[in-house]
Length: 193
Image (cartoon, one colour):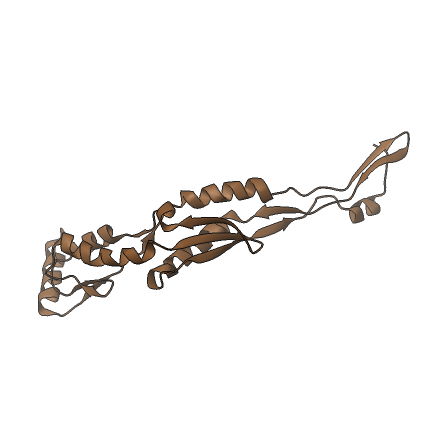
């Protein structure tokens, strides 16, 4: 790797790709004991360890990008990059990010949706012989906000890079309103079906 190339503020110039990868990978050990806890109404419903999530830095990809400085296909760019690095005109900086297996969150979400999603119930009247024989008031439903959890997970996990610690993510829900309410049926009048 050419001089004046940095990964996560570490100078990796004059190192081989393997040496740079080992240097940057040292910080991965700090993530090994972390976890992500998913909460629903402040109660934990799942805890995913760093191992379960396959939480790691994208070190190999970033070191490869650092290695390509001064080795690009276009001769003018390659020449300028080499001059910049050798003379210290420009510093090339790269940063790793945390990657993880998002399918683990999808598994948690599937279980949560099966357990907590409830459809809204419309007000119901059943007639027999001109009389109301069955009455059911409307009820709100609940839907888990899956996409919001995945977005929150991405953001919280990236904060772990600068501060390796376990984090919690709140699973949020939205209220589903029924299509037919008691108020609407009173306005429409009750008629036998």
